[in-house]
Amino acid sequence: MTSVLVVDDEPQIVRALRINLSARGYDVMTAYDGRSALGVAVEGKPDVVVLDLGLPDIDGVEVIAGLRGWSSIPIIVLSARTDSRAKVEALDAGADDYVTKPFGMDELLARLRAAVRRGLAREVGDPVVETSSFVVDLAVKKVRRDGHEVHLTPTEWGLVEILARNPGRLVSQKQLLQEVWGPMHVNESQYLRVYFAQLRRKLEDDPAHPRHLITEPGMGYRFEV
Image 1 (cartoon, rainbow, N blue to C red):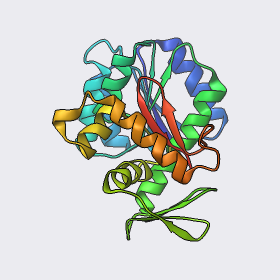
Image 2 (image 1 turned 90 degrees about the horizontal axis):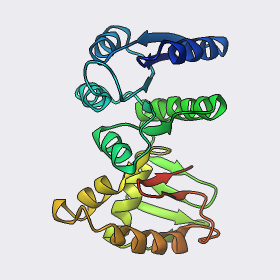
Image 3 (image 1 turned 45 degrees about the vertical axis):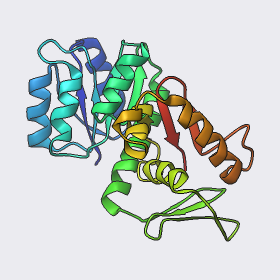
């Protein structure tokens, strides 16, 4: 049974999530503050965490950092903070996804299922990531489309590699810029627009309507298989 740790200081939200998740076969753990959440995570080792940021003792971003100190467990932030700065901060700390309150239960459940699949994929560590349009081979650092190798520049490959290693996860602009171009270029978001336009022309069936290299405005990019 898949286990979910729900962390929120609002009892009605915790109750609603416990009822809905339990009805769908999830084993639900709960915590109402950050320090309790870290303790429950260590003891219970859940498969995925649903985390509010506005906790009464420590901020949710600190909880993310605490979890990332020892675990790659998928983390979905569920927060009323809607500004892009809060979203980027949570993603940079290590969150996998971000859902704003008020939220639709169906959307949250879909994101939860995707997070669980990503967690399993991390454990398996498959070096080949296949989409309907192209195949990324992380072991040999190559991309193939229609059976033929696609020539990518080192920078293009760097972007594809980061996203392919985190399928479905929202990767922040800052992380991409820092890992590919270095810490001196973390504010050069125009680099990403240029290079992702090039990658879509090379890899997407319809570059104007990409299915795999997805932009999340103001936040980052997501690789959808």
